[in-house]
Length: 576
Image (tube, rainbow, N blue to C red; front, top):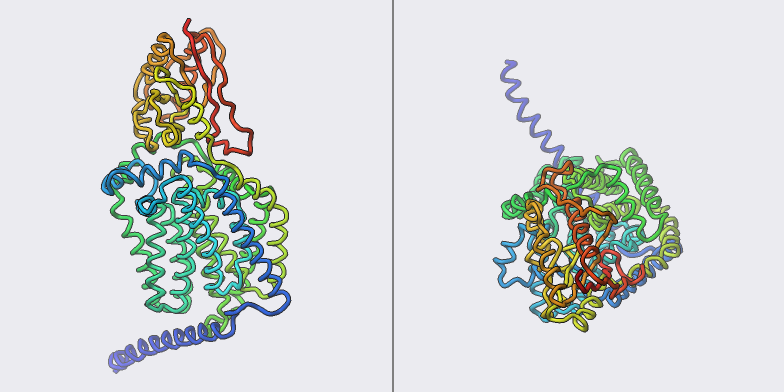
């Protein structure tokens, strides 16, 4: 009897659970419908709402002006941008695919740039227009993300991210960062819409944005994972298992799209060994601080304060919301944003430390973009915060605006001036020596004269950054001997040696000794000591044997030109 009763009770119990789940889902959908009617699909007509709208519009217009100013002032492409266009314009698409093992990005940006160049936009001016369009689309994505999360206006993301000098300059540069930022912001917005109501169009947009995001930058895979986990947290909360599976499927599609790159990534790990230094949490933290304070010294504190407020607001709505009835969407928005923010930030930091490659300022842009839109989403659910957010945005604008305006008027390179000098004065029997070697990538676009060009160490290929060739030079016992021989032959033959970038000389009676082949030094494969040693050897050689060394081109004073590529030129002549 008990056994029979149990057999009868089990199906009833399971049916009851399924019915409860259906009821929960029904209430959640009704809550979404109610939210669509009650939240601000239009803009608020109160004085605080009008103030926030005016602040957002004025801030957006100023940011548009910043993008236009950068496009007009950036000048010719600098070496990283030249690397991008040279990759994109290789003879065939299979050639691009074959070169991915020497690059740090998937193929999407190269294909987009190739298409743009084929349409006639391959000049420096045309490429700057391309960067401008990407920057303006990114600005539009901040507005779209805010509206889709019902955050009213992107007042925070505009002020703390849209006004960031690093985001403006390197988002508009001819590198994959701008498109990668655009698609990660769109992924954040579209995944939320799928978690909210998974209509077919929304699922397609979310999947497309997620795949395009990771196809721009490998690092975006971690942020897509964080966003998907944020959506899953909301759907699991409401026991919407099918919706959770749908979100996970979107993430899997993005992950599967990266599988073809595994051979290139595996081969790239070989040369990446020489780019790894001894970095720790303190170093990464300092670099992140530099990215945040690019527009103003107080901006890191604004980011920290905004994060702290977001961390306080989220638990409040989790405790005071009513997820069972699902009439208060605010707790779902805050949960979604907080999970994406925390998982994205922690995983991105962990990846940076695990790679061991010293990060540049622009490497933090993807996680900064996600953090900005996530915090905007959290604080956008608080009606009393309208006036506070508008005041904060205007304050940031007034304090950091002049600095940002100055920063976007900075030229990214002086290689056009270097090329102009060499074209005017260098002769066929002269030698142009570029140090460090990677500056030759930028110079090669602007200088194609008949004068011989050499790098320190000799690399052979100056189209793109070939760290694999640098590693081969580190394995040689005296890698720069051919360069020293060429300089000697040029000077003895009556020619001149033009040094682009300069050489560091240390006084001493003994020449610097060549380093043993890598990785015999305590620093292992790190290329820094070898670059320094080669430079000192070349400087000692010229100081010892040249009759005259003159400054032919002085670097432009900061901040008129980006210090990353503001090269002096020295001319060396005579032999003793």
